[in-house]
Amino acid sequence: MLDPELLERITARRAELDELEEQLAKQLAGVRAERDELAVAERVLERMTGQLAEERSSARPGQVGGGAVMLIPHREPGVEEGALPWDYQCIIAAVRQAAGPVMAREVGEAVGVDVSMKAKLEPLRSKLVRLVDRGWLRKLPDGRFTTRL
Image (cartoon, rainbow, N blue to C red; front, side, top):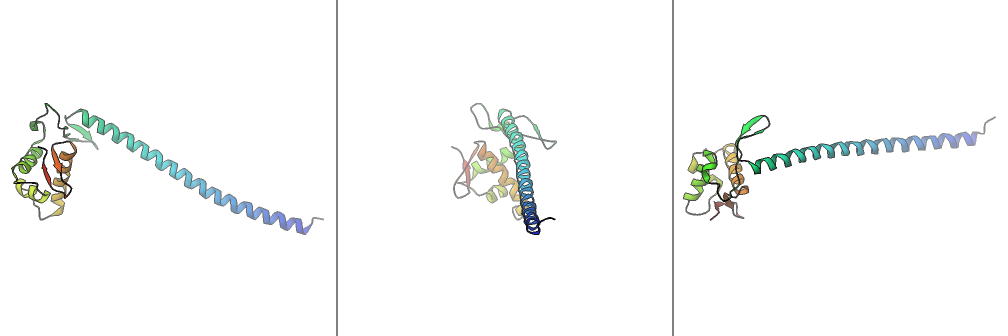
C-alpha cells in the first residue's frame, strides 16, 4: 500500500512545479516578445540609416514610402539655393527679408500659408527645421529662425 504522506508530498511538489512552469512560460513569452521587438527596431534603424545616407549623398528626387519626394541637399560649398525646391527657396527668402529672427508663423504669413490653422503651420515648421538640419537656416534657442550668416 502507498504511503499517504508521501503521496501528499508528491502532489504538493507537483503543484509547485506546475506553478513554476507557468511562471517560466510567461517569462519566456515576454523574452521572446522583447526579442521580436528588438529585431523590428533593428530593421527600422538599418532602413532609416540607409535612407539618411542616401539622402545626404544626393539631392536628386528619391523615394519614400513609394512616393517621389525631393531630397533637400546639405548646404556645402558649390551648392546654391537654386538646388532647393521652389517652396524652400521662398521660405529662405522670407527669413532673409525679415528685420531679424522670425517665428514660423511670421514666415507662414510671408509665404502665404494660412497661419490661423495649426494643421497648415506644422508642415511649414517641419520645412524650417529641415532647412536648419541641412545648414541653410539657424534655429535660436527661443524657437525663432534666422539665416546662417
